[in-house]
Image (tube, rainbow, N blue to C red; front, side, top):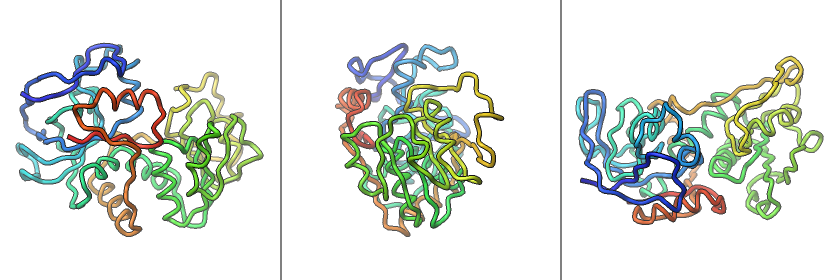
Length: 315
């Protein structure tokens, strides 16, 4: 048996509790990971409070879309017992049990070896956050040295990661927050702006990463120069789709719109991220650390949104 969080319906953070459940077995194409730490994500809050009611969610389910740990049972995979790995996405915590547990059975194609010697808590700040930041900046925005990047909704874990990557790459960064009290947290940016919902005329960039999402997207499209690109990655604004979106009228001439979906990581991308972090001496930062026995308090901190950055849980 092992300790895990398992939910079958709408679950507030205050109702989170550890339960005894069987350690999962493996099958061909799957590996068993001994979870050492994991990060919390906004999408897990959405799962608990809204998405769990949808038919496509496997219920009951152990939440958690990422983790770091060691291979306990490699099954028929390329891994060996004891390999240090990170895992993320691919249906974790939705289509099958995720990482809020002492062990996780995961599809081998979404588990990736790492030779990083970072401690588990710092390593746990990397998987989903840095994958999404990296993919948004380089796969979607094709960010280049010397360009100006606008990060809208920058005072979240993903925003901080993107800011650090962009600055290390030699870019000028304009970062925004909708809370005046958080402007000081954007000290690494070249310019920090208070976002009142209308940045047109106040921010001009070559590329833009919108983490607020559809709520601000139309305005963001008017904050990039002709030939620029906007990447819609987040949904911090709580609006999930554009009602009545007209691409002809709503996308300015010569501006390009894309989006990043983090469900398809690869070993090559993971290797590129770790190589970049090492080359630029970037240590992943997190805002708060909890023990697994305090998972309830960690989820409360996530739901309240008062933590400035990534929350990690260490087993």
